[in-house]
Length: 252
Ligand code: 1GP
Image (cartoon, rainbow, N blue to C red; front, side):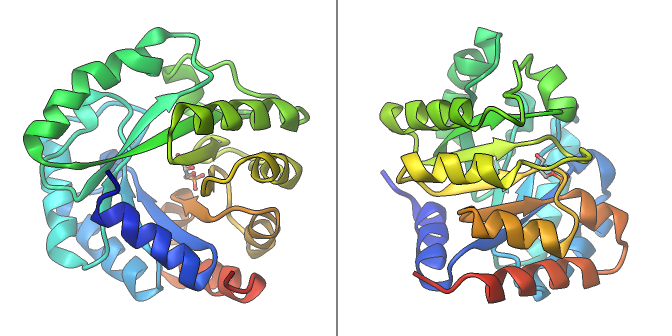
């Protein structure tokens, strides 16, 4: 069943065209800095907040961060877990994700089996997501034991994405890895978008307006940035990115 947060994301994409989501790594913030950053991000028209990182964090700390965020903004707070320790009862929703090119069954299905009853118990909205790590991959590639899809093999990314759609997952995420030097190539996003009818999320290493424009033009429906927020202590960068993605593609 499609829940409220998923409905909100789909309607926003439908109405406005591609949207931006701000990713916050709970390990890098305190409740007060998290509250300040999400307020700024909301003021810059980011559509939602995602909370998660590749390295583990204490759930008690995560709870404090998510609570602080929820008290600060109206936009949804969506968990982006690296493991079952990434689940907080205070969030609005959770990407219920499988790392499709992991070589470890734990990241394909194991963590999900352990997490599902917790999600149910907390009343969180699960949003099914096929997660695909490409290129350099960054920390998520190591932690998730991924076999990253080479930058020059867009057809492999497309095959993974299509498998996600056939499994009934409702979003596809092409992940280059947080903070990497080279984001998902536009040709890869385009190849994926050509074969799936699901909304496409792209993230990892996107820092400039040019990169944002290129990936939106290639068909990304949601662009996630995290590192730019950490690197630029004021909110200008995120405003610049969001403003430029809006002007680039007309709503469908
Ligand atoms: C990582 O795709 C996200 O999971 C965002 O990456 O931190 O490089 O923006 P950045």
